[in-house]
Length: 83
Image (tube, rainbow, N blue to C red):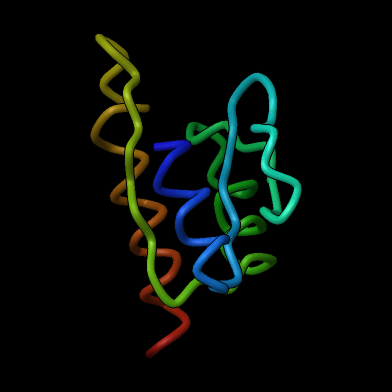
């Protein structure tokens, strides 16, 4: 995922990425702390980043909320901006 973030930034796309424990090292990326289980934070991060595209590369392992349920919330949060 870091490579994709880096490529998008190098190509000139405004790029934001989230992290659970520590941000990446690409200085040209807006790094935002995010716990996908925190619905209010998901909404705040989506509002701050105002993405045109969301790529979910979450790997919560056996934590179903992180792996499956929360990415749906994040996508829904972004979709609400278009209604």
